[in-house]
Image (cartoon, rainbow, N blue to C red; front, side, top):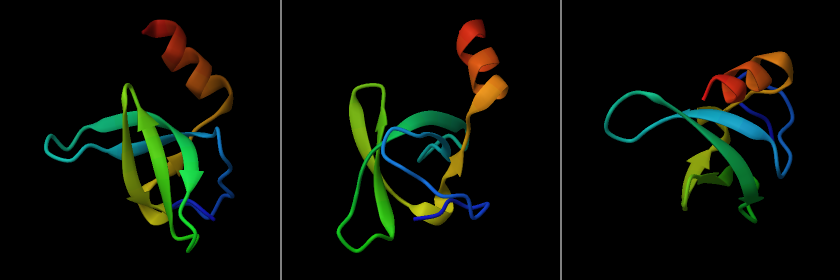
Length: 71
């Protein structure tokens, strides 16, 4: 499965997605994929959200580390 930028996604990857009602970004983690392979279950805080892969952007490396350290 690939994200919006056509990068491969794996279980445990950190991803950005747009929240449902506020049009702000949410940081989540891939929990599992659907059997069809077109969507992923994304864990955000204490809930799971089903998202199409094209609605996700994988984040990693120094950018993710800097963001998490500032929180």
